[in-house]
Length: 102
Image (spheres, rainbow, N blue to C red):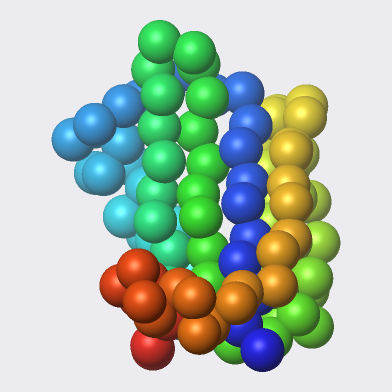
């Protein structure tokens, strides 16, 4: 069963195109994570937050990634990482065009 991971944390930038340039290597690294189907990067400059919505093939992959990524973010000086894991209801998500495939 697919598992959705929602992560957000305090972030002071960069934002937009500058974030895309600065984080390209990190994005390429994340793309190779075991079990990752996709990630949507999120940013809210007004609130000083960034994060992502991830879809993993299974809970074990999502939990392993969350543990590693939380430690990585804390090593970058980010004091608080908020995360939630959700099982995905594939049948209902398909009705509403949820991108559940790899």
